[in-house]
Image 1 (cartoon, rainbow, N blue to C red):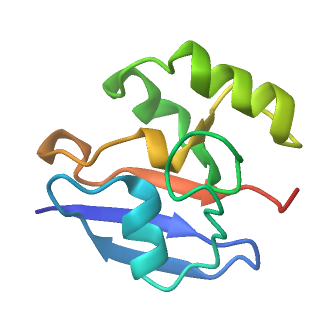
Image 2: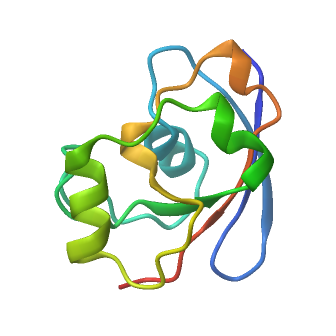
Length: 105
C-alpha cells in the first residue's frame, strides 16, 4: 500500500491509500476528487491532468510519446511537472507522492 497526497482544484487536501495495479487517476477518482477521466484511462483526453511535485518526477517512468502528445494537444496550463494520472501506475516506491489536480480544460 502506501499513501498518495493530493490537492484538488479548490485547494482541498486528500490523503489516499495507494493500490497495486491502479493508476493514479483511479486512486484519485475513487478517493473523491473531481476528475472527469472521460477516456477511461486510454491517454486520449487529458481530463486527468495533474502536476506531480518535482521531487517525485525522477521516480516515475518518463512519459510516452502518446502521453506527451495528448498533454500538448488537449491540456491547458502545461508545466514541466505535468502528467496524465491515467499513465502512472501505483507502486510501493511512490509512497508519499504529492500532486495537484490541474485546472479543468
